[in-house]
Length: 157
Image 1 (spheres, rainbow, N blue to C red):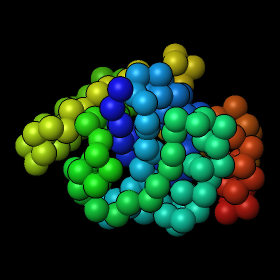
Image 2: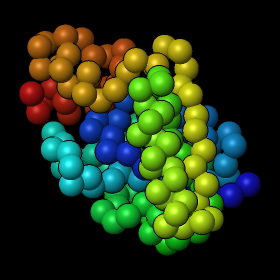
Image 3: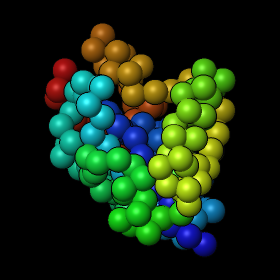
């Protein structure tokens, strides 16, 4: 069972992200959650803060490790000897973007296969932007993120 890269901004990591990582760890021997730097986004948390939260949230899952990475994901795939890129699909609206990215990555690195996982139904609607909006307005985010993330998010707000 090969190594898989699971890239994302993880700003912050949610139970939806964790669900996908756990699913991937049942298929792959090693899953590397890659906290990516995306120049087109303006994250609330620094890359280091996002790595720390992801590590804390995933610490009890021995087949999953967390790294930060600022280059192309295909470069990360090569560097870590991975054979797959994990992506989560929540709804059809995700598919167009993910389809384009999968083919672009394959064009740059033919051996990089993208594997799509669907989250549990309870996380189908969940994303980091929604969690941040709820937190900004004083809503309870405990059902959406681990305690470490909830605490750090509330501190930021």
